[in-house]
Length: 293
Ligand code: ZEM
Image (cartoon, rainbow, N blue to C red; front, side, top):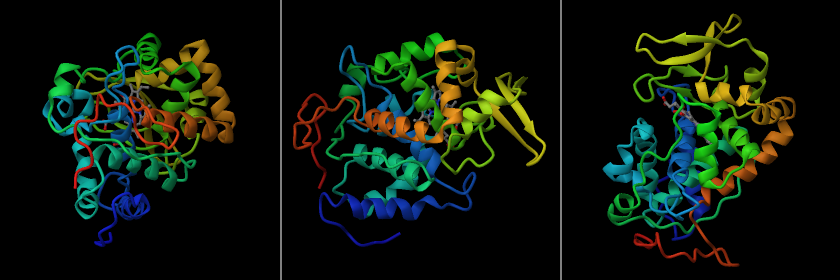
C-alpha cells in the first residue's frame, strides 16, 4: 500500500489503497474483500425508515454498544484491515471509508460498478447509538422469510431487493467463532457472481446440525471436495414463492442480477443520508463529527 498522503476529498487515492490491501494470502480464502463487504452492509443495515435512525452515517461500530452487537462479531477484522488506509488518509471519515471499501471490494471481485458518494460523518461519541438503540437491528440467520421482510422492509427495501442483496453471499464464508455457522456458500468465494442463486436453486441441500447445535444446510461438492452451506434465511428465499421467483431469475441471468445488485447495494450505502442536488449531505441529525482533520 502507498504511504503517500492525499488531499481531502481525493477518494481515488483512497480507492487505490483499498485495492492494494484486498489480497491477503494468510487470511480466509486469500482476500479481505468479503469481510469488508459485510462491514459496509452492517454499517448501513441498521436503518429504520420509520424513525429515520441508523444507517451508514456515524460509523457507530467503533463504539461498544453497536460494535458489541453479536451480529457484528468478527467485523473487527475488517476494521483492522482498513486502519492503515485511515492512517494515510486521515481526512476520510470511517463511515465513508467502510462503505467505499465495500463498494471497491465488490468491483475488484469481478462484480458490477457500484455508484458511491462520500460525505458521511462520524459520531464523536456513542450518544446517538444509545439513544436510538442501534443494535439488534440486523437480520438473524436462524429465522425465515417473515423475519427477513420485517427487517428489510424497515430499511425500505422490497422483496426483489431483499433477494438481490442476499446475492452478496456469493462472497466469503461463515466462521464458527463469529456467527456459529461454518463454511462458504460457493466454491469460489472471492469472485462475485450469481453462483449463490444457481446453487441455491439447483442443488439438493441437506440439513446439518453442527457440534455446537447450530443448524445449517449443506451440500458436499465431490469435484472440489468442499462442503458448501446455506443459512436457514438463505433457504427461506427458495421456500417463499415471492422470493423464489427472483432467486430463479438471478440464477438464470447474471446480467440482471448485476444490474439489480449494483442499484440496491448503492442505495443500501445511502441509507440514512439525504443529499442536495450537488451531492452534499443535508440531514444534520447524524452530523455530529464533521470531517476529522
Ligand atoms: Zn450476510 N451473513 N447476511 N449479507 N454476509 C454472513 C456473512 C456475510 C446474513 C447473515 O446472518 C450472515 C447480507 C444479508 C444477510 C455478507 C454480505 C451480506 C454470515 C457469516 C452470516 C451469519 C458471518 C461469519 O460467521 O463470519 C443474513 C441473515 C442476511 C439476511 C438476508 C447482505 C444484504 C449482504 C451484503 C449486501 C458477506 C459478504 C459475508 C461474508 C463475510 C466474510 O467474512 O467472509
